[in-house]
Length: 249
Image (cartoon, rainbow, N blue to C red; front, top):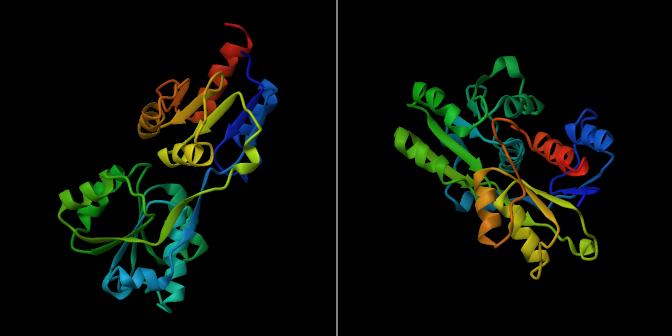
């Protein structure tokens, strides 16, 4: 079956040159965007109940833009003046760049990984005497606490925001040729909203091994997966698949 429609379980990109828009134009397919999950902030009172005193930490580990937003939101709610001396360990350049929304970049001590949490290991090792705070969602990849424990540093994880399932009831009578998922939470949302979901002819595209596992555990079929050496991004994986299917190869 040829591909005509795609639903990406994320917000629509805000940049004009998104590869998804290129895909839509080149392949003449309809690409819709809809977050299957969304983030809600935890109150400063709830953060305090986790025995978090922001003044006790000399370094912050930021794994996403959400962690940046909610750290500064909680600090503001607590009326805590973030000191200029605070060190920021950002998982990627995108997170570090986003940090400029809140701090004057050149005046702060900012350390940046390449892409994964593992990339931060040498940087954290270099500053192992710091007291690290990890503001996160309620669903954290197990590898993150494992790494920090193995490094033997002083650190604390605290939930600053939560991942919440979105209401997708308006999609109950809508079908797509391809559904695109980026996390196990997206799969949870699919079955929360549509407990009787049957895959049938729908193709499922997934990003990352944990998402593949979540799809297979639900008895579904993975038709497209990324990243691979040949297709490091989801848009590239979709492009390759549609090229083959729509041209009848």
